[in-house]
Image (cartoon, rainbow, N blue to C red; front, side, top):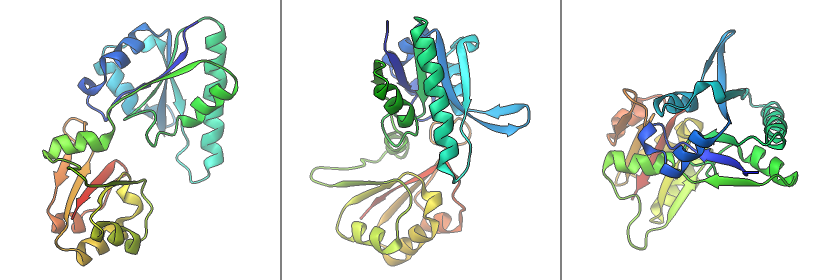
Length: 233
């Protein structure tokens, strides 16, 4: 039987999936994808939108709903349910895929599913993808790191003094969820006017991409969930 494939979809633009990832989706009998309930009878899913653009048969896609709550136990329960369903499909002899935006091994919540299946001795494989910050660098036409520069990737929550220290020490910082540290970023902008702040929203999403390195625009802006930043000294 084929291992359960964790397929990385890339940052949002369908063309940025790898050829290996696309082939895995085409070959799969069932594909689990994350979705958010927006109304009683409606869901929202970037993963599904990407697969539609790739002409993946919707009949074999299965949504799983991730509660948007600070109570992580609710999300973990949802991931455990997916792991159980994926295990059942695997034992039926079906080719199973589970998708994630960006790269499935880089700050991806589906690691809970991967770890659960591994603990059950279910064969799994992960197909690499392009994370959002790599696509952001391409969008802005910047080299994220050069020569001997060090890169710090920050998930989101960070104190202003810690961020300022990283930048002043010459490290390049990538902040994945800037909505979680808006005040720290804006304090950093005021403290280090010589740094360059590259701000991005919805990278890879058609008609929604936004990029600026104008610090006043950044200060005036409210950061949405799908936003990130690359900071150079």
